[in-house]
Length: 65
Image (cartoon, rainbow, N blue to C red):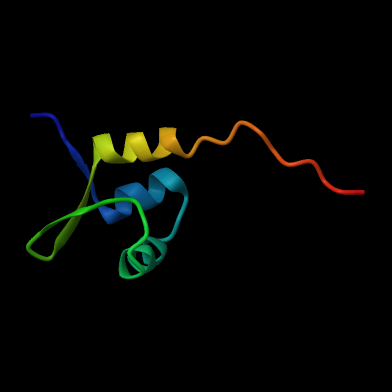
């Protein structure tokens, strides 16, 4: 069986965040999207991969002198 969802802990580890950061984003209605199974929060792999692709930054702003 293929795993299709990240837990809070797994996603926090993947992104180098604290779990409380993800919890705070959920409370504020910020991405990433998630699914609730009862009280369990899960993040679909496909949605996380899409979110990461959509947020790749390729250009940095030049500093004003």
